[in-house]
Length: 66
Image 1: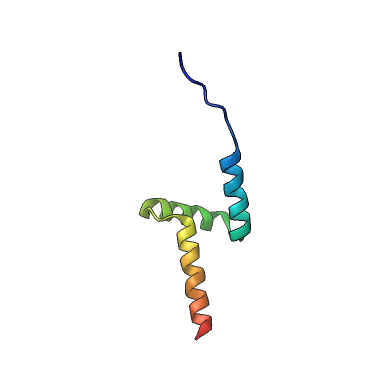
Image 2: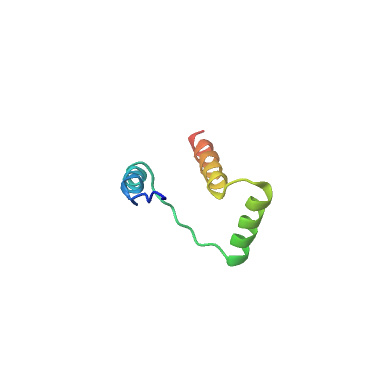
């Protein structure tokens, strides 16, 4: 007899609330060709898209602080 686990959303809800409290989403519109090239290069290099964007923001903020 197999056990069926009850599906709960508690963990997901907790993560969602935490992320809403700690993070802000930034949205940007770029030409489709640029987005496709960006996604392809990230996939090719194995670097997450968010990591590239975060690094660009950090670099930009560091330059402005000088």
